[in-house]
Length: 137
Image 1 (cartoon, rainbow, N blue to C red):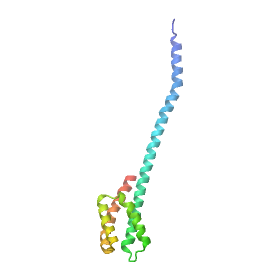
Image 2: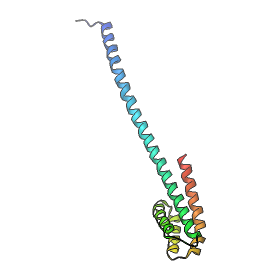
Image 3: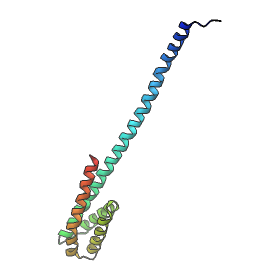
């Protein structure tokens, strides 16, 4: 029994022609899945940075209200307490120590001492926000 070479080559070409689109589709689908995963991861990272910046900004704003105003209302203290509790979770160890000290002074109504520490603390948080801005670009 003789095998015809042209028939064999034609059969191989037909088989490859059928298999090629399937393999191409599998490779493309895997690539698209990886691209979507990277995009989702990047989006989550950007959202995380944006959330941290917003927490720091709210904390700085409410802290400023507490230490600058002479008549502190319960509403202002509640706003500060809420933002303090959220922001301290993301602060550097140095900022965390300052925040705790300032918070203790506020609790003891030592607002002049708290005000003195606030400037240094806010400048340090500003640096953290700038680092977050660079990280998100």
